[in-house]
Amino acid sequence: MSSDSPMRVTAALLVIGDEILSGRTKDKNIGFLADYLTAIGIDLREVRVVPDDEDGIIEAINALRARNTYLFTTGGIGPTHDDITADCVAKALGVSIDHDPRAVALLRERYPDPKDLNESRLRMARIPAGADLIDNPISKAPGFMVGNVIVMAGVPSIMQAMLENVTPRLKTGVKLQSVSVDSGGLPEGIYASGLGAIQKDHPDVIIGSYPHFDGQTFRNQIVLRGRDVTALERAKIAVEAMLKGLAENDKTIPL
Amino acid sequence: MSSDSPMRVTAALLVIGDEILSGRTKDKNIGFLADYLTAIGIDLREVRVVPDDEDGIIEAINALRARNTYLFTTGGIGPTHDDITADCVAKALGVSIDHDPRAVALLRERYPDPKDLNESRLRMARIPAGADLIDNPISKAPGFMVGNVIVMAGVPSIMQAMLENVTPRLKTGVKLQSVSVDSGGLPEGIYASGLGAIQKDHPDVIIGSYPHFDGQTFRNQIVLRGRDVTALERAKIAVEAMLKGLAENDKTIPL
Image 1 (cartoon, rainbow over the protein chains, first blue to last red):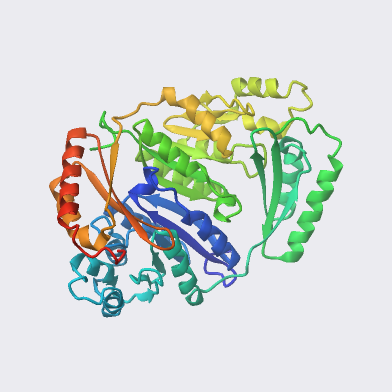
Image 2 (cartoon, chains in turn blue, orange):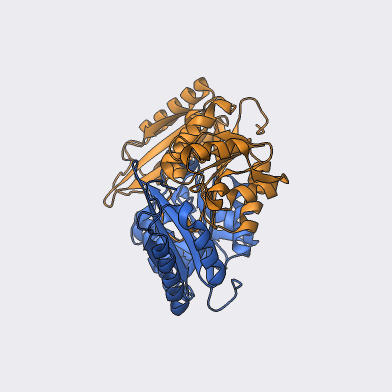
């Protein structure tokens, strides 16, 4: 299915910030957005993390917005010199950028004394032409959506609030359903060939096998995902039957 | 500085797996690798997360290995049908791939009974031509390094062991030093213009400002990074002097 299909809505996430790549800040937005988009029927297809570098940000914006229904960005919309996301989005889309009167009005609520609303803070009102604002209930400085690009803050609580606020404007697809089957202690190497055959027989279902190692033992989960609940159920039954037929195999070897 | 400079060694990370993008598994490798590489003097310049899709993996491998000293990958090297990383690396590099006798020998240690070492498990011995193996002390199936591409497991404990084992083979740069200055409650909007001026005056130092919101108050850290300790110290003194000059400003507004 192409990303234009009415059933399938796709997204990419661009995480912007030196601090994630240096390890100083541990990203909390990728996992949150992945869960959130999956829940509302949008497929997250790619994530990139790039530094605060104009050329790299613009290249990533253009690559990712072209091949997905939506591109979400996090980070780089504060008042300091390293906050260059809004300007990069404008350049990538080839639109102008200026202080947006709606955003300035929001900042005036936050900074009622005119001397507090200095040039740096006004940077947070720089919004590309044609954008719709996204409310920020925590610190007022808005996110925005322009074309198919959704620009959000990097601070997780603000990002999450902006994501909630922009959701009603998004088209969503048929939710990808997911079911898990525990391998019951069977190692991946025992069921891998049977699972591969089931994947071939059920092309509408995406089947993955995920070993988790807790330091002592592996615990394997087989995850089946798909939009057609009946097809999903059929594949699940096939996996369970396959595992049952292998139950007598050696379970002492983890993979 | 280019990535060929003896002082600067760069890396990208490619995280491979549907399970990260669906939210089912929360990545723990990005933050770990970011900390680890920073500590040994390698700059992590970009991260991508892609699904288990051959074309997308090959495209990302070729984009990232071309512009960095090293490309690290995590995930997709187990025995099941969705484990396609090794084959994608071979295709991206244009080299052949087959069962590697050294890897088969390692798997024989793990599966001494020949009937246990079935075709699926032997997939874990598929290694691109010309690769050096990377020991896996936990489950034996090795990672490998071929050209400038370092292929590791997705399970965090195994990834971390492989990273330790490959480190002696890597060239490392001059470590990027980092110092932090707490804004002492000053909001970003008050010091942003002064900080921008200091950044302009100290081009060898990378200066960022990072607000952290704990649900009630913002706490801003100014982080300075650079390879020249003297330049770093000079910039730090400038930041501290600037903050001191602003200390009388309103601290009740967070940004």
